Length: 521
Image 1 (tube, rainbow, N blue to C red):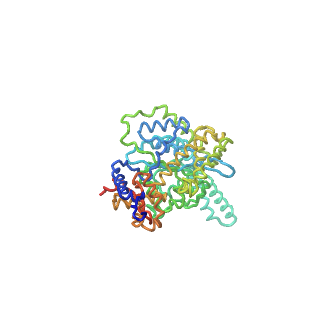
Image 2: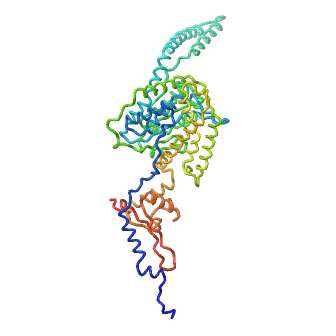
């Protein structure tokens, strides 16, 4: 009797009603309810620039400029940071602990699309630097003229003494030689001051190195364009030249050959403030040596969302008192610190030191290559704590314009710098995503490109593995994470597994593809 009993197992019942096909059809019908997929590299909404962490005279001007120009606050904020770095870079350092010292100069870069009024923001945020430069030049010009005249007269005396020494004979010769030597030393002893120069724009590394040496090892490169990167990559020389920017960020010794002599800059301090087009972010990753030598790890990135198309037509101008206070204070900071050849050493209060230690404890696990969210950008994240200390130094000096070196950095200032650091961390992750630094995201891009080429409405994991290159996906398991990324971004949806109809290997998992990929031509 048992032998004649019909098969009434669950699998047979599901098979008889074609349950697998029904589920697939239902899933396919749901294709019309797809949401718009997220672009690659898009994480959760990037945080806005926290202007409130700065003193009022800085924060209000940042916000007012952003409002008048109808640009994201990030742009005015980052350019304002570069302006503070220009004022204090090379003139102050933060003594973090023991022998750990951080200079306060920064490399800051904002990515904005064309037509975003970058130049107007640069002009408004850096105007006090130009005015301070003129004030310094006016004050030193009489001394330059006086020294040049004195040197020219001394040079004439030295030349006359040298001619006399060459013709002197007998007992008069030694005395004439001694006079010629003394006159030559007098010429060398006359120092002609140089005209102050705070900022350069589009400049070659060689010219920047010479100018930096002339200015006592301190210079800022501020530009509303990103041409400096092509120059660094060797646009004119054919050879990448990154040494100035690497050493200028770290405060290392720089050897400069100029005007027939070699000069040593003991602690080079370079500030970099750029506003570039978004595609530059991806381009610089492929420039020779930029990441391998550590340049990309030294930059604080900002990728604000464009507001083009949503701007007010008649926004209010910056209030005059806000502009006046910003100009007065920034110029005071520049001029007050300009003559600091031996950098002011700023220390942390015990409370600030504890805040910073807690910050570092939170950062360290994030660097783990297997589980940390910063593991794939360790070259940037490894300098993150130092960047926070530098930003704390700048906020501190902006808070205590007249005598910042007399006060230790407070816990509130260190917390403010940590907040600013979290902003730049989120934007750095997005920037390095755009550069292709995340291998999981790059794997997802490869699968996405295959879907764009073949335009299937659905596919199985085995089909994808068979079609994709072994150089990237060596085993089926290598596809798991990229497919998860694509599904999270909304490009594909995993279909329910069909019921098993008998023994044997389970069918390969299948995915439905977003209609926008299926219909592309």
